Image (cartoon, rainbow, N blue to C red; front, side):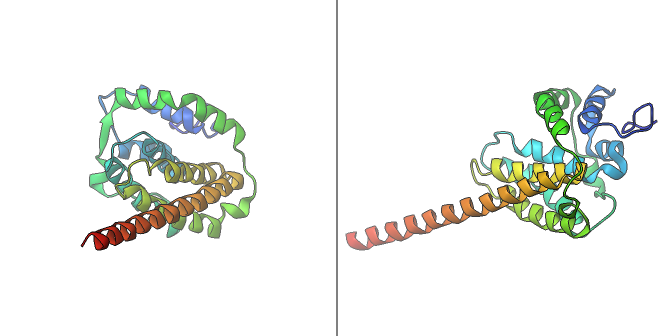
Length: 211
């Protein structure tokens, strides 16, 4: 029996595996250990894990570091890889296990509720082509996360979280929500860019009037 299987050989829920990882011995939890724990199921859970991290209220520039691994993972998903591959340096990235337990504890109830609601449906949304498109969307959303924009991490991180949930549970409805949130992210970026350009033009005109 592996960490991802119950005593009957059935796959364990994502939240149960996360809890088991936190309960293991050792002061540090490496990313490689997380990937190994989920095995062939690693794509969705690891992306979901990083999405949760990026939902936290980071200071400006914080998600530049936490969003970078998502960019690599999303590219692999878009390329249609069957198994998750990480470079050695990224596998060795670790967090304090006590901090991991505290962080996962904050999300325990929402995770349990999400797992109860998610189920296999609308398979075309998460199939071969659908999963590749999800990967491309996550690449775009990861780039947005990497940008040092204060408060700009929540919407793309939530979208990635729904995409990851769709991949994990083969839930096309979750993937559809991810697409809707991706559209909302594009709209917010467009509005923000329009306001920035308008502000710059207004400032230039104001300076022109002075001189």
